[in-house]
Image (cartoon, rainbow over all chains, first blue to last red; front, side, top):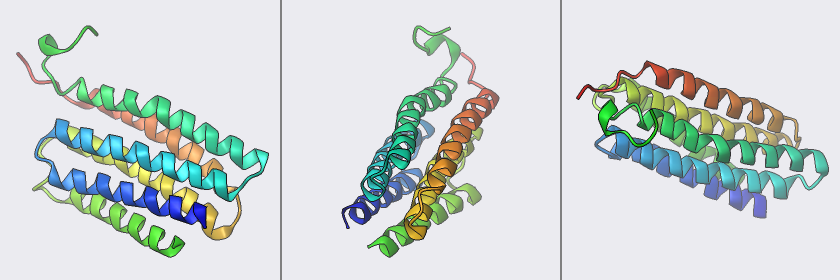
Length: 94
Length: 86
């Protein structure tokens, strides 16, 4: 029951991500709207999986998915967004 | 409630695919890569919902593979964006 509610919240935040892709006018606004909302959706889905299957193996896999996504989603967002600016207007990298 | 979650997630996947096919929303090569990035996260959510429907924790491992492949494909595809000059 609780896991189904968490899955519903996660799919609602994925719907927000899809709406942000349609609604936003610019590439940088699109990547902001979509990446944050989909990270929140993955957090909700991993919490739902951890509530639904409370045994060591599925808990390990859901925690591994959550850690992997939270480590790599901002890096992917940064890798796209840093190519959208001209090279003399980027930050300290390169 | 699980049916509603599956319906909403499928609707969002269809909306993202419709954005991929429409020339009104895609203006550059970066938009396609952003859409592929969002689609991999939504497929990860579909894998976890598959585990809920079957009442079996095996598809969580598919979700782990999808998360790794999404990160690698986004990093590799982002090398193909031409940055604007000046």
